[in-house]
Amino acid sequence: MTDFVKELAACRVEGTQLPFYPEKVQGYTKQEVELIARNLNLDIHGQFREFLLQMGRCSGGLLGGDEFKMYNSQWNLDDFLDYQKCIKEDNEMCDSEGKIDPFEKKYSV
Image 1 (cartoon, one colour):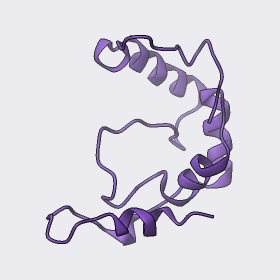
Image 2 (cartoon, rainbow, N blue to C red; image 1 turned 30 degrees about the vertical axis):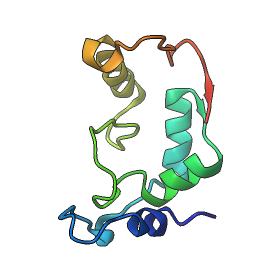
Image 3 (cartoon, rainbow, N blue to C red; image 1 turned 45 degrees about the horizontal axis):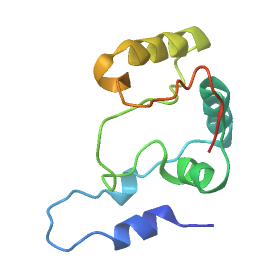
Image 4 (cartoon, rainbow, N blue to C red; image 1 turned 120 degrees about the horizontal axis):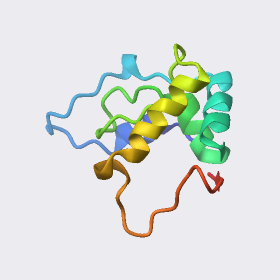
């Protein structure tokens, strides 16, 4: 099993001023990963599953970028589908050349 925190921390360059808070690293539970798979119509396995379990919820600053919520324990399925619909209708988020609609095609990750 790959230790993603260790691997990513080893890539950091000394003195870059990039924040890293190892105490904040948090993964999803197995039950949450199953809900993500079901809600996103994905087959989650291998390293992606390991990554989600180890640090999918919070990377502690190791990974930057925009937030994309895959799971929120306070959402019911309708809330999740509404969020996905808004993301899908956002031209900046969804307008990419040759895109494949995740709602029409099941991916194997």
